[in-house]
Length: 274
Image 1 (cartoon, one colour):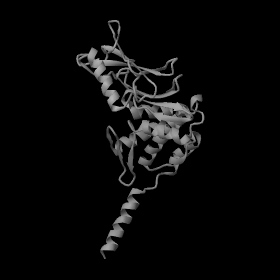
Image 2 (cartoon, one colour):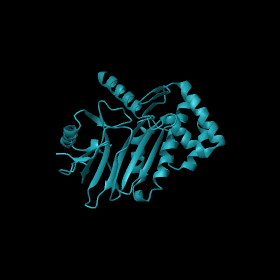
Image 3 (cartoon, rainbow, N blue to C red):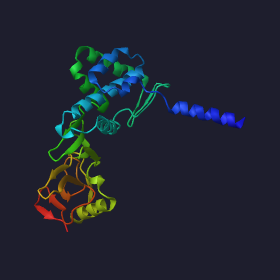
Image 4 (cartoon, rainbow, N blue to C red):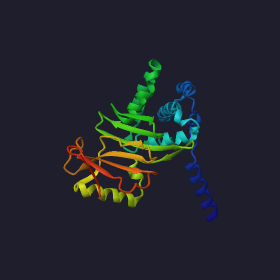
């Protein structure tokens, strides 16, 4: 009897954890997806559909970058998925009609209102649908950008509001593969990051962290190393006004080239860190 009960519980758990996702989730053709829009009636499923439509829009944008030729759609989708989880849906329970967000919990009324707005735009101005969906995702006046630098770095950058805050994730493109670099400086090995902090504090005793008002700059040097620049905040600095610019070189984004760290006080001359 106990075995039967345990077996029943196991079947229930399996059935709950293997909910079937809507058919459109596997469709990465933007034009074909648009044709499905009017066939979806469930409000939560429709909201998820618009999220998926935005994802496919991003996929189409990435595929325009010649440096990403040869990167599989699956790899690109994984990159987009990891980027969108910051601001959009990461778990949906279709039975309870509940959405769980990283930042907020959306009510059913919010879902219906959002769908109504997006339906209206889709009916009248389909070209602007991705941008409005993105704005509703990130917040007014906020954008997510994908671009590939000349150094074969894929940058995914977010500007929230009027550049009041910025964040980004970066990938190195090598041999038709993409390597996740986080926000560059956090990808360093722990001991290397601690050494970088110690070096910065030797010149900026009140250093707290990199500024989130500007993205790190990455440039490939003639010697093959990558030069990384970012702005550094001290405890008394306003977020808009960092004290210094920090530069270091790396060959693998995990370690810092010895003696390559320099600190430039923004109102002073550049100095070599010890």
